[in-house]
Image (spheres, rainbow, N blue to C red):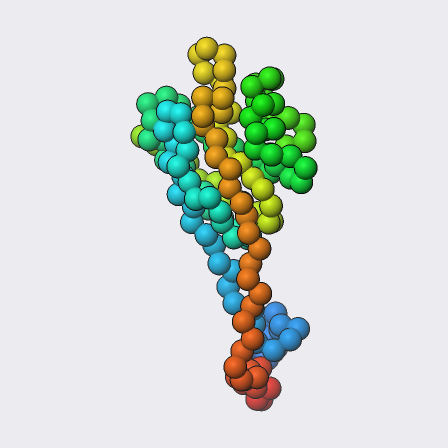
Length: 175
Ligand SMILES: [Cu+2]
């Protein structure tokens, strides 16, 4: 007997949910799903093989340790007013990234034949991939050549649709 009012509440809640768009876009059609870029990075003793550029947005870096030493990968933003050479010189002088370099993210240290993933949202700019591990001689893997500059480029402006068609919005207006 007590079930009926509860059912009625649930039924009206259901009706409300069905009639209410969950996230109505402010203008016209819903935004397309965001593109996620796959970025393969090979880490050898002692160099990286990776793309020279990616587009702004979400990137999944897939680091594969193809060497015999342990490696890792740190993504560092170089920023305006500095160069990859400045970064390298700082690593040579102090064995660690300079204060002006912004560490965006890093993978764990992985042994040979293993892999690691690092997902980042990167704005346009100048970056470097570097392995910051110190080798047994005290010099970093970066100094041995394990770094690579890459650029994050701006997305091209969205193409204008040929027709101002908005079938999703028109369908949503129907009762
Ligand atoms: Cu390394």
